[in-house]
Length: 414
Ligand SMILES: Nc1nc2c(ncn2[C@@H]2O[C@H](COP(=O)(O)OP(=O)(O)OP(=O)(O)O)[C@@H](O)[C@H]2O)c(=O)[nH]1
Ligand SMILES: [Mg+2]
Image (tube, rainbow, N blue to C red):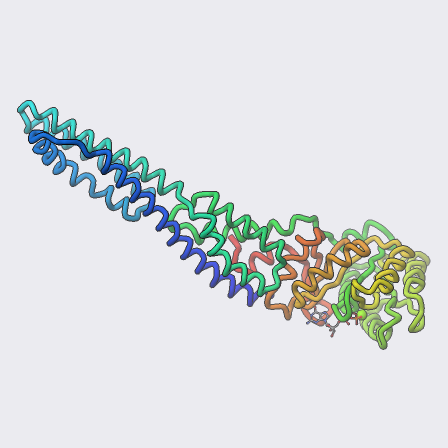
């Protein structure tokens, strides 16, 4: 899962970071240039011949010392800035002592004070440089332009719009509103993406086995559009409960699709769990009700209600689903979505949630989903947890969902 998105994301993050880095560099240079011009205009006043001679000597003395500052100005990190400051301080002390020894005339004070002033000016410049280097950020306008490509990658991979907005806001906060040292943009971008994506899964998860131990019978209703993976997921869960020493009964409440009852019976036989069924065309609510009664009578732990696939837009079929829920009063309503359908899956989950109130989501066919947009988005959009990912057609192909899995699969782990 996420293979395609992972690859694309890496390329776009690299490119974004490089461009943002250049942008930052440009911005710092612009500000430094402004600073230099300001300094030059401040310095200009009419010098006397004496001044000129003193200035020349002072310049020579300062020249050496300011070499480091120039390097810093060009492109150095803060560590270099600090060591340059230290060096210059030491050199100034030395120069002062030298000059005090060699210059015996009245101008001595003049030259020394010029060196000191020159140094102070440079120290002031360094202070400003420090300010510029540590507080410069790229402009919001340029950020928006640079983010466009990332936005396209996220859209192409079925990430929902509101999720893209959140990722963008978080990233803007991390590199526009917060100064990032040069050379550290890529790290800042990766960290921001990781935290932003982790933040998409703030709803509490559901442990299906532990929850079912807390109530008997524990009734779970499964819903979703046609072919999303409901029946297969129910079979996987029946096996999971059995493996955990719990008894299940399956309600064959898809009385609509041809062969649906045979399909679930076949699974049930393989796993060794009973099925409650009526004829095709029967009221699915009655089938589900019978399954719950059977579980109560036989002291069975869990009732799994299989339902026919339906579109959220089909009012009659949604009303039928609501009736099943009314009659059986399930402990959990699970939306089973098809991961590969991306944004459609996210929208359907939201619609089913509006229509019948969903407690959790299982995303089937995650094994064939190279993009993963639904897994990234659906929980944030619906505020419901993803409980499991269906990762194949075997009963064991059910992977508990956790956000670290997403972050790791996207190559964003810390
Ligand atoms: N690769 C893969 N295939 C799956 C997964 N889950 C289900 N399938 C396949 O998807 C197809 C449809 O699965 P079903 O379980 O019948 O889906 P359904 O939602 O019950 O379908 P309807 O009852 O017709 O609405 C079957 O061929 C399954 O084997 C999964 O996690 N991975
Ligand atoms: Mg089915």
